[in-house]
Length: 220
Image (cartoon, rainbow, N blue to C red):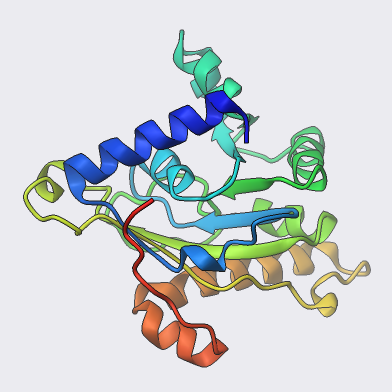
């Protein structure tokens, strides 16, 4: 892990723990090496730094392209391996950039819904994550974030802000049907969102079904 990335990650984690008592469940589910796509729900601008700071390895981000035009912020997120994405359409060039990042053996944080949910409810996934996983069938780790949409309220409710990780999985080979790519894209996207939805009802239920235990490790 690069020193600059490590510094930013620790700073974000320390601040989140201090202000909101950030909790982490299932961190052990994240592979320590090899390419992995971390897919999460999206309810706040805080989600990218919050999810990234609890992943115990250097990662990258799929971020909306508009952020890269903001002075200082654009340079900062680019230095943390962010890749610009057009939310209206995921171009082949962007898919290749995301794929190259994964193929280099790194982690990538991706929000399948494409934009923030205003009411906190899980939205239907956009087809982009299905396209990415059809082209680059890497391991996927689902994540569920809560409490980031109400940061002021969470200041007075320690531990309300939490990130839960489920066990890694690989999409089945039949989900990569070359005869009907669009159907494969949609099937893969729905599978990703189903895994995130499974975490919403509680990691205990989700992990009993997969045989992987979850623990709240809280600290760094």
